[in-house]
Image 1 (tube, helix red, strand yellow):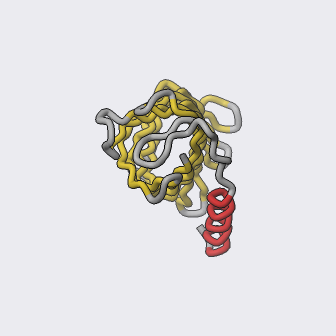
Image 2 (tube, rainbow, N blue to C red; image 1 turned 120 degrees about the vertical axis):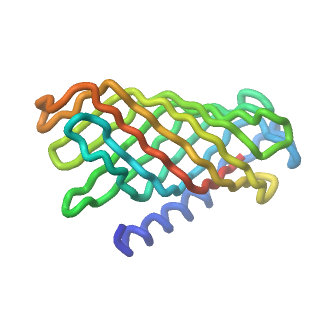
Length: 192
């Protein structure tokens, strides 16, 4: 990312954080998980790889950002939708992976910051005229660290995995049964 991109990302993050949702009267006070709506932004380091007979087997490193919005299904379960994007420049070719889908975050022990993550969605890979689209599964774990009554930060690791898509070049199939994985490790900020 260029210095201008870093400044733009920081400005966007500040704007998103400052426009938190209005507190609903049905929400619980601090000390536990609240009910109502939640949203979060994340910044992660990602490692992506396409898996096929003609693909480069090395993992490419790059930054990733994400946004999620949802509701509390119970004291221990958050559900919602998530969108994310990863990018890397390899030589003079920019590679990008875009994702969207449903996500669930479950706290197995009440009162603990530990949560496990599961999701189902879509991943799309782009590099010049090359493209790939497939269903993805997301698995991961994280740890919530409360900042205030309404704000939580933390870190997490997730793995997005896709299989059985085909790699295309300008719309023509290059190879079938391609896999795509993105391993992400980073931090998030959530408004609850």
